[in-house]
Image (cartoon, rainbow, N blue to C red; front, side, top):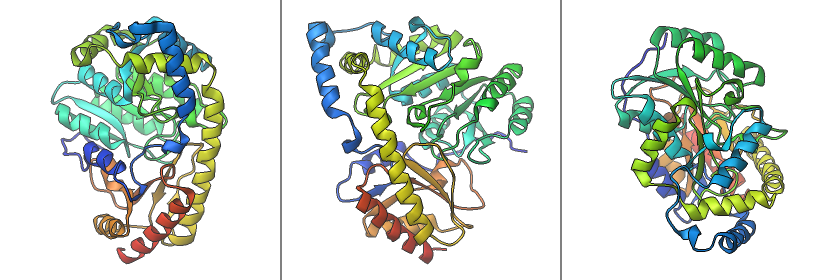
Length: 387
């Protein structure tokens, strides 16, 4: 039985973000898209249209809740996925990261128990530790995420304040909760009085269409929804979206204390980008790019990594989760690979406690295709030396 515990996060977000911008590296580490995959021209045109329409108001103070028209457009997109959401229920935030932090600050106090999937986005571990909360790990058991009976048992036993889960193409594992399991998960959380915070940031990258969000099976009393356009359109815009549900006013109050409001320029740009129907052609191209690169990466891993390495199947996205056959010295591997100008995401930063085997998260989007294959070949050789 897993039990809550206090911990120190094994990685720092600031280190990964600084490394992401370091020139001369074959970067398989930070979960960031390549600049070549961004719709830069369309966004530039959208920004110009926004200024033509809004004028000086585009550079002035704004409502803390966000651009009203953008909020309605985002609510409409959620309604198409089955969630009964109105524009007035949408709160704009500065990237998904702020949305997660706001939820944590509102829902949990120091010493409280917070549940989250593991492996999990390392920055969420950092937020939970900084908040002074105890963590309850809820294991991701494979490409279809949780064992719902295990979730039920853990929530019944420990009654955490909330459960954080990236429901679609989870970072780092790529796991996606099957559509049939989503209403069941919501009902489990509702029955135990646990608010579930759904991180939906990667759903737009799913090939074949994203499943309904958890919010589609709730009225906002159990599910809070967080997402952004950082992985699908532009990380530089820093446009995030939050549907807090029945805790909306508490979250909005905390938001305005932090930054008054998010970037008006960015929100207007995204609004004009969506109004021009530019997003779907862009996403179709992006999904195909990601699919091609994942296939290149998996082939290189199968060819050059230690025998017995497994890659978890996934339905989209640009990161590959590799499970190595046993324990490897990933600290030494990282040092050796960096000497050859290759960096990767060691699985240790995605777990709050040690594991009995080693994992890697490998970003296939940032490097060129040739560099991607070459970097994985170098990494395969390094892993053979650190077992």
